[in-house]
Image (cartoon, rainbow, N blue to C red; front, side):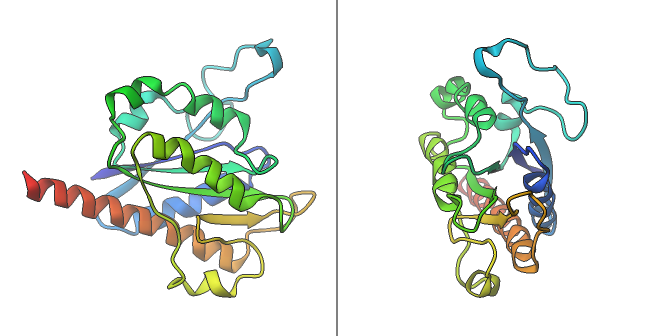
Amino acid sequence: MADILILYYSRHGAVAEMARLVARGVESVTGMRTRLRTVPEVSAGFDRPPPAIPADGPPFATHDDLRECAGIALGSPARFGNMAAPLKYFLESTSDIWISAELAGKPAAVFTSSSSQHGGQEATLLSMMVPLLHHGMVLTGLPYSEAALMQTVTGGTPYGASHVAGPDNQLPISRDEHMLCIALGRRLATLAYKLAAGSSDAK
């Protein structure tokens, strides 16, 4: 079994729900399993240290989670077209993994949620791709062979799965968004499996 790390930050629960759907897609691929992880809040001036263990939900991510995974799915709410500060802060702490190139050649995917239909989803997805590219990862998105991508009137982009949560985060994940989250996880896990198999054959 190989682990796909699903690393996310969620403020109101939408991204966490997307992470669970991505996990379903990953686990539909034989030989693959998920490792759900989150990151702690950051505060202005760091006037209070983050807790060592979250009050609920999955554990906080460690660098070993990154090293041990066969691939990564990153998820964040949209923040003015950028990933949320807690996820960015964690990624900026991974210079040791970048120097050792421990993520190079592994596949990665991204997903996001925003309050409005045009709330910077694609820019946020691209912002998460940048550090993954610096790590030498192989990015995968969603092809238009996924029928939901062409027909969606809610979230969903070729850059990764997305969700429109509404101004009060009241909108449930739509059928198309649901299908695209699962498709993204399945696509990421399939790519990880093929890359691992190719690496074994090369040996």
